[in-house]
Image (cartoon, rainbow, N blue to C red; front, side, top):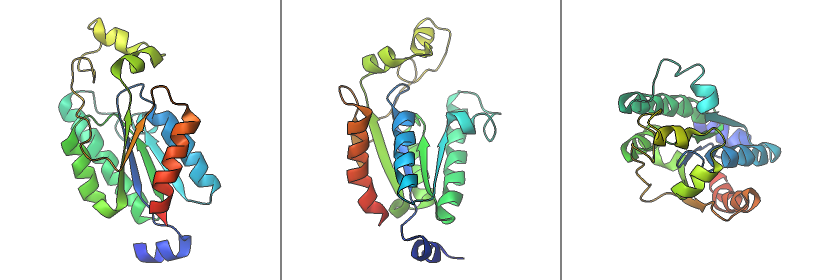
Length: 185
């Protein structure tokens, strides 16, 4: 079965929608809300995030730079399979390195990849941090924490740029719908 056959049967083009941003930026919240919207509109969807990937597929990886690279590589490989199956897959990962995101884009094909930069200032992310991860990182209890002692390389040309500070989830979701749904036709 070819992807073109799935597109014709499903009536939409499967994509990998890659949400990236700092911890606490709202990636998972927005990806989940957008998945619900798409599913309710008849799209076949699946979301990959730290909760379902780190507990199984990537449970053998830590948070070192090399493991982060491998984490994103595996996610991209699984995402490619979903896209090939005709599914709109949404990922919500910090994915701090541009090269890793570029490799994911290359793997699934640029025409099948939509990068969503969930842009939220560090201080807002820290205020939203219900798990206390930023405080632990600042206290030296979590090494290599992105935004504190490990870099986050902002996307240079994301297809979608959402600024969540001072904006409701509903407003951000509306932006996602307006900017992404036309690309699924």
